[in-house]
Length: 262
Image 1 (cartoon, rainbow, N blue to C red):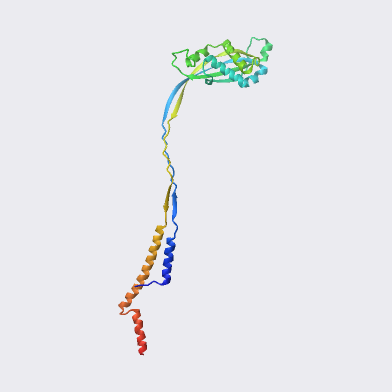
Image 2 (image 1 turned 90 degrees about the vertical axis):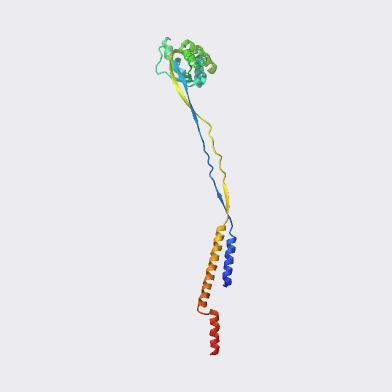
């Protein structure tokens, strides 16, 4: 039997106690939320007709810049085109600009020198129809027919009350000089509509609690191994002495007896 020294026993006990008191650790695994989206699209093509035209106005030269830049004037002109054509106001795009040259007017020379020209151009965009109805309000066929048949008098009869309602009577002196021929153009608008996508629900983070059990076991195994080594060395020494015929303790006693006899 091999007995360990007191110091060795205390060291082993302290090591086991320290390993036992090791604080467990908590590990949080942050799982990334994943999502998938599936999108389907549907494409439709619609045909529209752009009907463009214009007319020329004569305005007092002193009021030219104010007239062209007045938003109320542009609103009145847009309402005039919409009313004549039968289209909605939002379907009318309109531009007002100063003409590059004076019109040849039958007015006296003094009046001609005091007047300036303003060009009004418009584009009316409406869905294309099959042409079967020429009376349906807002249809491409009816709008084209209405704008094709206008003249200076018909424009003036609609424009004058629209101007007076917005800027007041007598604010501007306007004369409709000429009306340009209309031009049509068929365009196609392609519309792509995405459908609603589907997404996977996010994954919640996972918390995993772990301890140092593995470390404690490893320390204990190391201590047991050390004890086993010490015991092995001691046992090896005892066996060696026995092979020589006596143990170290008996050999010592024999030596003492020989000394006494001498």
